[in-house]
Length: 192
Length: 182
Image 1 (spheres, each protein chain N blue to C red):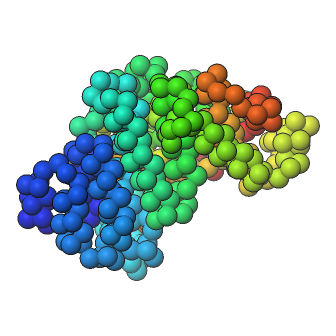
Image 2 (image 1 turned 180 degrees about the horizontal axis):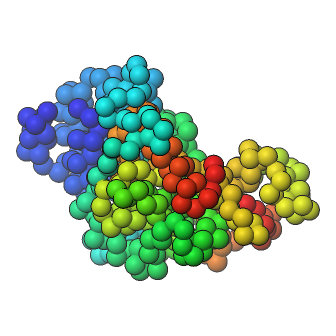
Image 3 (image 1 turned 135 degrees about the vertical axis):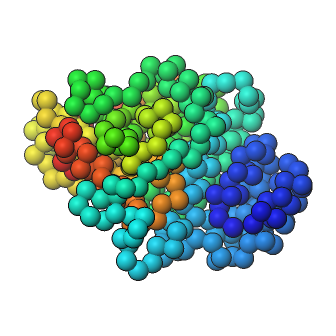
């Protein structure tokens, strides 16, 4: 693998010759698994493992790092310019975010706290990494929640995050989603 | 070789080379994995972030890389189609705000967004919006609420660019109903 990457680097910035080599190095079907659309980690058989805690509350021991740390500085700047600060569940600021009735991004930090930001502000997508300022999470994703007459209704929750959940197998995604649902329920009183 | 490793290379190419390389990967029957979401994220940021690193031309090309990545991701994980479209359309809207509407350009063509929204509208049962107006949505079945929210998300993107382009009367009317939807 390292040899292939070194070769690619030596080829320089042109996509053409790079891909000729790349395509030769990769056998079609070698990567990924069409039966396992969520991931690449060999998630066959029992989805629960030493990596994925499938016990009640799920995934409690697993921590996900920010996979794009080099972009954090500009992501924080964009969020700031968009007037976005992360808000914690159980606060009036969190209620105000939900009252916008738009898609949000959420994360459960290593302390187990649920935080969130808007998915998008004026078409500018806000990074998940902004929620924890680049620190690791136990789970992250997106959610649609709607508020009517002060009551908050959970519509949809997913574990989608290019920063933290990238590369997860299906079982890890299931566990992350479950952890998110649990956090919304316990910390904000929202059921999905 | 996981796509994650190829990703590191692609994001360090120029936008045009990254685009060409991605196209060649597709044509070589390379089997992508879900880690392509990271490329979609990076490419979308390169296209929309307000910094001086990239010219307009490069940003438009990064947007194409993002769209191809979202499309691949949607094929890998069919459940993610709506989320990918939502991210893609928000990116398009952001770029239209930055560069203006250009219906000759694949990315800056506002019709792409309105057509997506009207397509989603066709998935909403005809009486659903009428019922919302009459009795609200809180007593509806969760699947009906999900459909309405999905459609509302499309309207939210349209609303971003409503001052940049002329929508049909139907779409303008639907946008005006947005706040009634869950």
